[in-house]
Length: 207
Image (cartoon, rainbow, N blue to C red; front, side):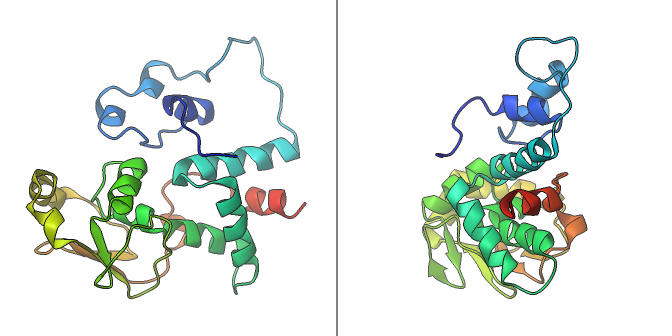
C-alpha cells in the first residue's frame, strides 16, 4: 500500500485528534476545530469496532502520524520483536528516532511531512555526513546539523529567529547557536506526542 496522499484533515477528523499534518493551517484554520465530526455521511449511530478493527485503527493511525508505508511499519515491528524490552514501546521508540521525526521534534520543520521533505532534499548532516534518507534511525549520541549551504537560505534565517520558543522533548537537546540537535537517550513512552495504543499494534501484527 502506497503512502496516503489524500486530504490529511480527514485523518484528524477521523480520529478526533490534531496531528499537525498541514503546518501553519493546523494553528490558524484547523478543520477539526470547525468540523469535529468524523468525515463521511452523517449517521445516527456508529458501529462499535471489533477487537481487530481497533487494532487496525491504531496501526493506521501510526502510519498516518509518522508517514510510513505498510512494509516499513511491519519491518519496524519485526525489528522491535528481536530487541530487549516491551515490543510496543520499542516499536514507538524506533518510529520516534526516524530522522524526519527527529527533525520535526527539534522544530526544524513545522510538520512531519515538511521535515521529511527537508531531510529528503539533503539539508542535514547526521554525525557530520550528508544524508537524503528521512527514514534513517538515529541512535543515542547521534547529531543532526544543517548543511552549510542550507544555512544561507531565508528559511534557515527565519527559523533561527523563531526557534527560541520551541519546547523540546527530554530525549533531545539543541544548540541554539549552531542549530545542532543531539539524541541524548531513548524516548520514553510518556514522551510520545499522540495517543497511539502500541499494544493494539502489536496484536495486529501478531495475528
